[in-house]
Image (cartoon, rainbow, N blue to C red):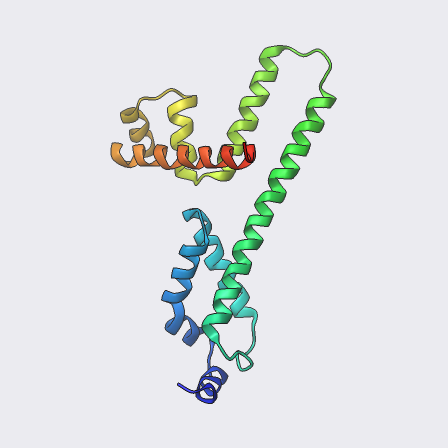
Length: 179
C-alpha cells in the first residue's frame, strides 16, 4: 500500500474501525510493554480513552507506529505514577517515623507496621492475590480452608499465592536497588 493510499484510509478511520483493524496489534504491544498482567487492563483503558478523545486520524501516516508510541507513553506514564507513589509513601513513612520517636507501646508499633504492609500489598496485587496472601499468612488459613473462603479451587488459590509472592519479591528487589 502506498503512502497516499494509507493517508486516504486514515481520513475515514473512526475509533470503531481503528479497534476493529488494530485491536490485536494494540493488545500484543500492551502485553509486550507492560510487565505486570494487572497493568495491561489499565493501559488498554488509557489507550482507548486517549484514542476516543482524538477527533480524526487524518494526519497520521503510520497508524501502527502512532499506536505503538501511544502505548509506550502510557506504560511509561503508569511506571512514573507508581514510582511517584512509592516515593511519596517512603517519604511519609520516614516523616511519620521521625515524628513518632516518642515512647510508644511496641505492640502498637508492630500493629502499625502490619497495617502499612497490608495496605502496600493491596496496592500492588490484584484483589484476589492480596486476599489469598492475607488469608494464608495473616489469618493463617491452610490452602483448602482459604480456597473455600474465596470460593475458588485449591489450585487456583495456590496460583494466586504464587503470583502474589512473585510480585512482592519483584517489588522488594526494585525498592532495594542494585546491590
